[in-house]
Length: 144
Image 1 (cartoon, rainbow, N blue to C red):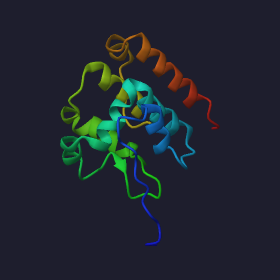
Image 2: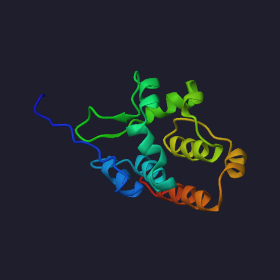
Image 3: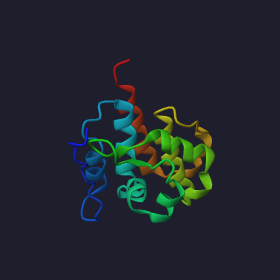
Image 4: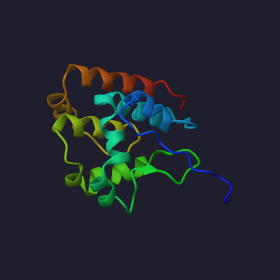
């Protein structure tokens, strides 16, 4: 206790969303969490991960439940906090319908929110749809 050093998350735009996701996955063994975080890293070059880390307005609105757990030895997405925002405060997310749909799918991989698949299908484009399918496949191949 007190000897652990928090590891900073790289947030600059010089790294890819996939690299940012991998930074947040150090030491994470849960395949659903890995699939969800990778989905957010692949979607629009890490759109949601970058917002979770750098959007001051979003950080202020979620101060009671930060979306990135920086107190852990390695920072990671706090999926419980993401689920709380999606269920209790969705208006603070200020995003397009496709951006919200991808976030909802990611959170649903960890049972943090339910999704209406018909609405998701209408909201996402072909590339986003393929990212979602890849995440579903990755999450579905984990041991029971």
